[in-house]
Image 1 (cartoon, rainbow, N blue to C red):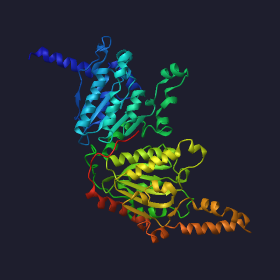
Image 2: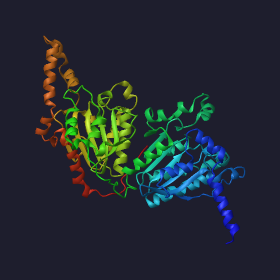
Image 3: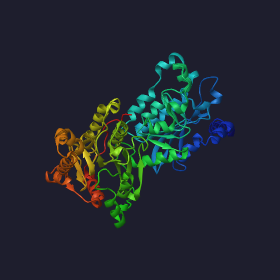
Image 4: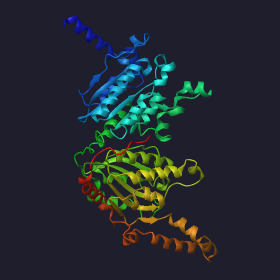
Amino acid sequence: MDEDTLKELEARRAAARAMGGAAALAKLKAAGKLDTRARVEQLLDPGSFREIGLLARSQHGALKARTPADGLVAGWGTIDGREVYVASEDASVIAGTRGRVAEAKSQRVRDLALRHRRPFIALMEAGAGRFQENNGAIAAGLGARFKEHFQLSGRVPQVAAVMGACFGGPSFTALQSDFVTIVAGSGFMGMSGPPVVKVGIGKEVSAEDIGGAEKSAAVTGQADHLAQSDAEALAAIRTFLSFLPSSCDAMPPDAAPRPAACDTPEGAARLTTIVSDNHRRAYDMEELIRLLVDGGEMFHYRQNYGPSLVTAFARMDGHAVGILANNPMRMAGAIDEKGIQKARKFVDTCDAFHIPLVFLVDCPGFMVGPEIENQRMVSLASRFLNSVIGASVPKATIVLRKAVGLAYLAMGGRVMAPDALVAWPTAQFDVMGPAAGVELTYGKEIAKAADPVARRRELLAGAEAQASAYLAAEMALIDDVITPAETRGVILDVLARTRSGRVPSFKHRIDP
């Protein structure tokens, strides 16, 4: 092979690596963004990326010269030494619009991810498909990506980072992922962008109005993580994947065990005092979790959405766990429609990838009232119950204070067959809150009493005594009443007892 032939190859490669050119890259930098190749380099272990389709270009005559790599960087590399497949859209090439050749590249890495049972990561800054390449009757054959993401679901972890305007199809594929991070100020999601909305319904709206990062993370819950920069989003992807196996055919990776704060005398003392006997007094559930888990570290899942229920990944003695914990500092720990929706997908994800569940229960029940019913609360609660019932991973349930009605069942109650079901001395079990139960049952009697306040207090004291964790233990409806300092030991015991019986395999797909 002569030297000119090799020089031509290298020249073509260099042109592709130049992306959309110096001006377009400078514009991205000025906006505080990383370019597509910098994103891939920062996401993956140094030197591990192997690219495919570098020489790809649009085959549309007017676009061929303007589309190095056809605006998509694709290939595979490693994260913490484990292989992953990645597709990263290039906003410097025709604003990140998706071409047919780029779609073929993306399809190729999705296929390889499924075949080789490795995670698939999409770094997204996509406009819709290019009109020049997809208009007209050819649109009748579009959409294979949605089926491919469905086929990946539950078999390998899928991750999406929304790092630009991703209206339309890109939002759909992002939501088919198991974890979505979105970058504040630059990430947008929605059915259609502002121009299409204006044409479709004649309304002027902004991208923020439709699906800005804060809205997606806190209002719609369609983003699982809110990042303040590209770098933070990429770091979140690495952290999320550290808890999951490469596929459903393997167990989650272990890490080096680290001590928990509750293992120290000071930490155990704080764990004992953090929860008040007064069920109306709030406390910081996140602080409690950090006392229990390795190194005090937890990784939130939808932290800003449905905050009365904490969902987070953490480690116990080096083993990955998924934690669901009521947060008394928000709505007294009651679960609303947002909390239910994030909990359902969190449980489904943990179950699909063999991550044990830990329930920390202090819940007065599901939210009630006409407004919550408008959100189809009964249907959502039923779906959540189904997910917990169907989850075959180990479960540890610790009741700290309130365990009321159907919400208690959904939070790993006895009928959910937890591998350990214990309570702190402060715990109470009831079909509804004691105060509500007394009012419903004895309301007329209280009204007729010579001293209604005293009679109500007397009846409430009796109801609370009947709800005691000690009585539940006497009836063998829970396994034990424990001290707060014994909590971590109970969870570690569940992980140890169940480990040998866990056989990884495909269980189910994960719905958006």
